[in-house]
Amino acid sequence: MTQIVKSLGEEPLGSGKGKVLTGYPNSRERPQRWSQAAIVVSFIIAAFLPAFPGSANAASQYASIVIDNNSGRTLYSRNADSQRYPASLTKIMTLYMVFAELKAGRIKLDTRFKVSKFAASKPPSKLGLKPGQTIRVIDVIRSLVTKSANDMATVVAENVGQSEGRFARMMTLKARELGMTKTTFRNASGLPNKAQVTTARDMAVLSRRIMKDFPEYYGYFQLKYFSYKGKRYRNHNALLFSYRGTNGIKTGYTRASGFNLAASVARGKKHLVAVVMGGKTSKSRNQHMQALLDRSWKHASAHRRAVSQPKRVPLPQRNPLGGTEVPVASAAAASAPAFTRAATATLPRIDGIAVDRMEVQQFVARQTASNDDRSTGDFHVQVGAYRSHTEALERLNAVQIKASAVLAGHDPITLPLPNPKQYLFRARFAGFSESGARSTCSALKRQRIPCFVMRAE
Image 1 (tube, one colour):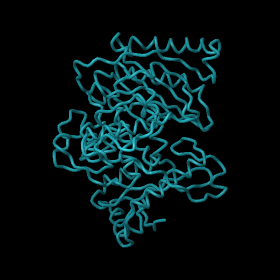
Image 2 (cartoon, one colour):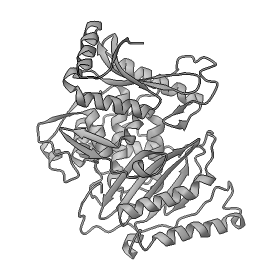
Image 3 (cartoon, helix red, strand yellow):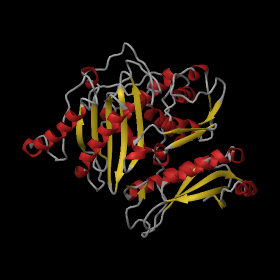
Image 4 (tube, one colour):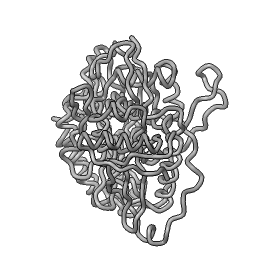
């Protein structure tokens, strides 16, 4: 359970009419081709309604959508455009804003955020830091992904946006820019607020955009555990442990919202992104999500192709936050290093997801630019190389926990290395002089952590 929040007096918003699609390009025009499949999927919903929404009131909370991430097609939807309460799915946008700050170089992973009295007062789920304490951005990210810490969401809001109200307005403006036309944020955590609303479709848009816009950081959503100050926290997203191919993304719960889940699952070359909102229990929600995904695989495409993006709402020249421009992520690096023909002969894979060459080049360009911005020395300490970006992040996480004193002030980074079939992700700590890197590596080896000293590329 992500949040245990009693939101007495709040009523869920009214449901809208949904639509059922099964993968036919012109399904609206050819009902004879999909009516039988629609009936089958409707039976899935009907079978889950007694245990899933659970009552007339809860049923009005229900909404769902399944999108083929390769083609952008909606494979299934029900009440997908009806407004619902996001609960902790809100934190996906909070993390989007954090990743944008990192990418723009305004903060670093080892930047320390200060905890205010207001942030410390937030109800569970929380890390429980006291007013005046500080915490690294990388630990804030991990706590939001795994424990869904409400206090840390407010810490982000106050340190990035000066106040939670201002940060929520920044989130709403970003949502409009991304095409999330029916979403409004009032806080960074998802704690109950009648004016904080979204739709299943908007949350699917956000889930797809955060993995597309920040592939160098999206891997955090795959972390199964997070350790902090001697305590170990398990990710609330049970699909990471039980449903093959799951690589994120987030759960959410308040009394008004019911149990929500946004999920990203890749199998082979197929990739589905789905959202379920309004579950009675986390277990029935997870079962329902798996049933929808199971029914969708046969309609999913194994080939990536360009698709039209959701309509973008232009940002105003001056924003309502007090007359200053809204901070937004900087544009991706203009060009990437040239690749050899052998390196691009086959489609590479990032965390098990097939990607086209242009996306890989953009990924490497962003990663290289980001790493260059964060490096203050000419040498790195490398602690491993992995075929998965997530594995590299988890290794950096484990090393930081074990040797935090030795690595203080040095950013964890990943450097992708192309080879003919697949990318390798080198896990490193940056910003060393040559002598500093060698002494640090020696200290790590004394703690039985293998490492190498490497000159920054």
